Amino acid sequence: MFQRIQSIYLIISSALIVGSYFLPFGYVAQLPLRTYGVKQADVYLDTVNSYWFHLPLAAIVLMGVFALFSFSNRKRQMAIVRSTFILFALSYSLLAFYVMDAQKVLLATFQVSTAVFFPFTAMLCNWLALRAIRKDEELVKSVDRIR
Image (cartoon, rainbow, N blue to C red):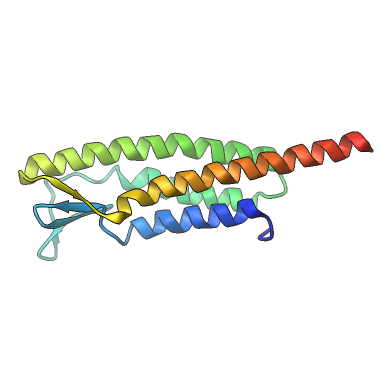
């Protein structure tokens, strides 16, 4: 299972998404903009709604782990990895709304942090995993033709 390169890509992708929960995506008015809210003096601001932003990211992690353990069924694995791209698009659009909402409420500009690129890098790893899974499937089909 872990000797296949797509498993490594899926592990890296899930680790990057989990890492984005612990690092801020950026700063608005010197306040860290995290996945689960804007924290000001040990209290999360209720005016900046981040409830729906972390759900697609959590689903991506769960689907990545499920795809990792469904290595015996490559077609299902490809379908799971393909469906994560929809969730990546949804999470980036919700991130844009989240940042715009925080800018509007706090009346400040958004300063980007490195964690904003974690979901994009995870999406790239999922794409590489999809390519590797497809390559494995083609290899198995070519061996079946030889028999």
